[in-house]
Image (cartoon, one colour):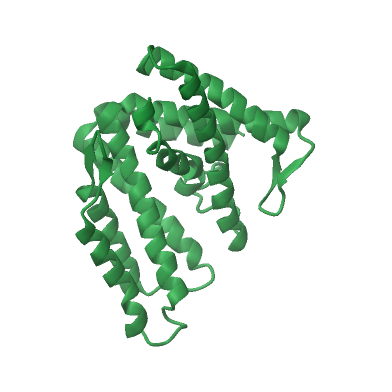
Length: 266
């Protein structure tokens, strides 16, 4: 517990100044986080099979390109230059043919790397998109996941009896799932109404926040399933006691993606 607390304090000391600074400093911070997340994702794959260095370099080059070409529009929210997508598919899929041998770079490897670059690049770009629209939106979204996760743990420890998905995450329970969703929704709705928009309609806000809380917990299970498949407890140990970047951002990644479907309603 002491290690977890120290790691959390160090993380806050780094994150809060970046959040308050904004601009280029904040964007560079997001880029660093994105690159570390991609490294964890690729390292997980390499626990079973090594990825050619050439492919890894291409993947690392594509992440900043995705972040740099994202454009914010209040109507479409997020757009990307399709030339980047075309280039991504070409440079990551065609080498599958050039390497010839499946043991070097197969279709499964190509799909894994391509999906990771797309998923991490798009999801991390929302850290910049939402910040540029209203930085307090990010606080609202992080509150949903943080409070939900914390109270899901507390509720599960106190009254948890029925396993949620034992094959993926043995400690999670339905009681924790419900308790975390309710408290996470309450706190996040209160923050949104107090800080972001006091005039927002309550019913849509509550329903959207509850949905995002549920999505966040499912996102956590998604990443747990990846770790379970590769027989790993954490993606890395960059934050002792907490795991890696993807261990900490598993829920918020899905919440940010889902929030893009509803932002025009709030």
